[in-house]
Length: 161
Image 1 (cartoon, rainbow, N blue to C red):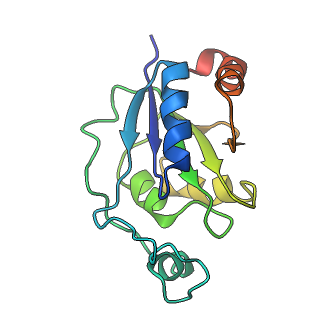
Image 2 (image 1 turned 120 degrees about the horizontal axis):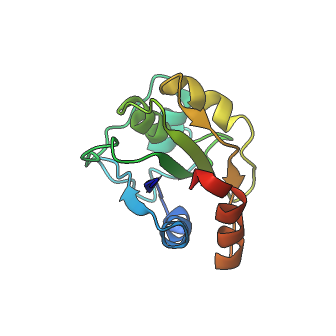
Image 3 (image 1 turned 180 degrees about the vertical axis):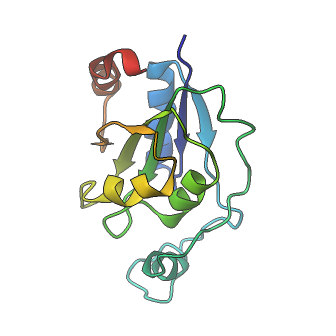
């Protein structure tokens, strides 16, 4: 039997809400990708070019450390990875997460929340960061997702979850 994980990063709580409900609908385990140094409101001020998030997103090599590591990824076949969209892509802490584990023979399904933009080229940016033999399914923007919508999405994924 396939085992599923919902791993997510949430700066404001919006992605966390979706991730918790998705985990419940999918019968999945839940793991929060927490930064070692939590983000403050000032850190998240995208209008300030000197804010922490602005600096991280301008630096392609930025890899914010994660506070807690997932004990193992070995027991999971399918991993939903959730995050807010920052500057039209995933926050760089997601890069840290993807580079921290071996995703060989795993199915990865990204999902995101965003105040103003879609997924854009997010998956194209993330794919090269993990195992080449990981299978990526199309991602989904889950702004204002109802539980029924989440159930329908999981159902549409068929045998992958």
